[in-house]
View 1 (cartoon, helix red, strand yellow):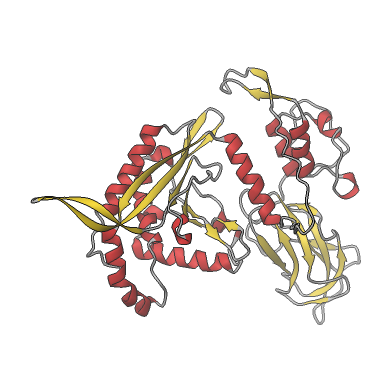
View 2: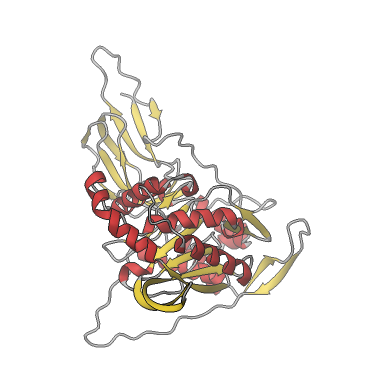
Length: 431
């Protein structure tokens, strides 16, 4: 009887491994085509792996909680022979990937160029971290592993890096190929003692990832935040005028967010240094404008779906994309590729009535825009008859940026352009 191997799929361009959360089927179960076999999780998104074939699940190759590299078989299904078909030899195995298009097993790269091979298994993620941090293979072999059968995990490597006092870092551009030694400062968190009546809540997997990502961002980028206030009275009046008609016509609400996205996309086209990433001493100006939308989840966690090529969409297209991604984000139905590839991020503090804030950059981007609450305030208006005080709808924009490559002047020009576009919004805009 022929068998079919279920392969750990590649759930996105940068995904190299995934964790098995829960097996939905057990050995001996009969499987129908498209039955969900297992729940897996990556650092980007959770997903189910369906079976592309019908048969009997004969073997699970990994346990719940195991971290598995992309392209690795995780289960074996015994295929049912078609009527009149000759059974295949018992040892014949059909290997194919789960139904994710163009899945190719990742080939692990060596940790260093000229070092002996190790008999110890290291996942591609561990090897990539070791390569980036300058950890030699012999040094990697000395790290105690907490994974299955003593395997070194990402957490083990990060813990080792925290305890290591010195590390080689690149001090000049790649062409110079000069390596210097710099001391890495290890900051010990304060000791916390719980008292009687305190409730201890362990962070879930997503909250741990968010925490690690935020700390990493602050360590990588010197953060600076600039602010500007914007009169959005024209936008508020326009939305009040069209929201009921739009809801009746489209069956969904229109918020202020699509207008902010449209203006941001235009500003990023005019100031491409904000739509960028940093690679060592190289600045990468991104061709595509892919804007991430920080979205709060019912669990209290945060996820950032991405609107790709936002500069190529009209206001209606952006509105549809914003509503769709926000809805599916809150119901955990986003696809892996929909939370990757962002080049800039917008976070809306105003949805919780916060006036403003200082957001943390979503690496490897170089800036993030925070939108504050819209509030009615007295403002001075210049008229032909002189200055007058009027009640206007005012909002604060906050741009946090990586001071390695974005200076205050550039950030100020970007915010000033945003202010101009938002304040000059045409109240007769059609959507």
